Amino acid sequence: MFNKILIANRGEIALRVICACKELGIRTVAIYSEADRNSLPVRFADEAICVGPPQLSQSYLNIPAVISAAEIANVDAIHPGYGLLSENANFAEVCETCNIKFIGPPPEVIRLMGEKEKARAAMKKHGVPILPGSEGVLASEGEALEWAKSVGFPVIIKASAGGGGRGMRIIRSEAELATLYAAAQAEAAAAFGNGDLYMEKYVEHPRHIEFQILADEHGNVVSLGERECSIQRRHQKLLEESPSTQVTPELRKQIGDILSKTLSEIGYANAGTIEFLMDKDRRLHFIEMNTRIQVEHPVTEMVTDVDLVKAQIAIAMGEKMESVLHGPIVHRGHAIECRINAEHPEKFTPSAGKITTFHPPGGTGVRIDTAAYAEGVIPPYYDSLIAKLVVRGKDREEAISRMSRALGMFIVEGVHTTIPLHRKILADPEFRAGHTDTTFIERFLARNGEKK
Image (cartoon, rainbow, N blue to C red; front, side, top):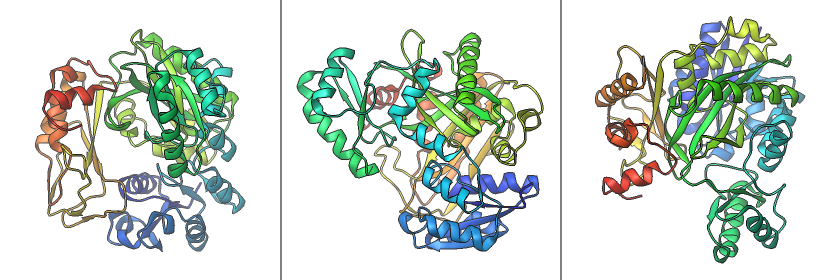
């Protein structure tokens, strides 16, 4: 049993982990930068330690500072949340060396899945369907051209070391390749310190489907089903739902069984998400794995009644899957999550500042994960996420109606938010009909006369 856990994160996910720990009777330590001194995680944690100035590199990403805080507080474990150090294999190794349990996968597995082309090879070896593409990192522009001709245009090149749309380019012809290859390589090097690229066949108008898994430290892996994350802008998710309208029970079981076997064989442990593209023939193709809890994890929690953060902690304490889950996974109803960001809803530009009014919605089937409050400040240094508004209904139609109602009752003043955008998406006939793919937002904005 852990007595004390340090949360190496900030904002709503830090508060989410604190809530889980409080219910488990585990003491918590929040770390914070000077910009987050008055944040709710600092208020609700049992202890709080400042790790530096507002800049990420000097605070939340400063591994020596984070480890020093953990040692000063004498914690048993560190929960990294998502983003920041959550997929940093070096950080996981340092935790291990310092005899602090890292609540996540082993460092070698984080490293394997973090290098996208190696992850593709590992998944392919174990029978997970992948897109045709290069075998490993591209050595040169010339090799990229050879693979593009072999796979067939259009293709997509991606940064091996990162994600979030950076270091990614779609190439539709040989004439475009040289320019786009150089641009992707430069962007990847600037963003991740690594310009390595790999190539895949590009799927036109795909759906983005991801599967949530849990794996204990005894070789047992279960799939908790899928989330549809096709509503995106510039490869950043805006809205997620579960189940997907396009995944049949048979496909859900087939992919879940393959993933359980694969991840057991590679020694995976803790929570993870495997991301796929679905083509027009409803075939799924692996693209990457996230070795952490996801921003959108509440969607799965709402339809399975499994507390994924509590499960993470139980797994890290060595519990077997049967005691973690207390029975088989049962899916109930339909859930939708809207990410409420501090952004101009049409320009998508950040909107930092003080929140003057904050009134979150409530009612049956409504959940809100947030660390925001009236008179609280949205700092300009970090991600613009204010809140995650999540609903569950008996079916998709009720979930859409409930989310529309909740968005209409969500009042945030003092900063711009994406609430108006989400209200329009929920009212859109294409969305309501389930006709979504990763190009939905471009079509939606064009129909509504807004800027892309």
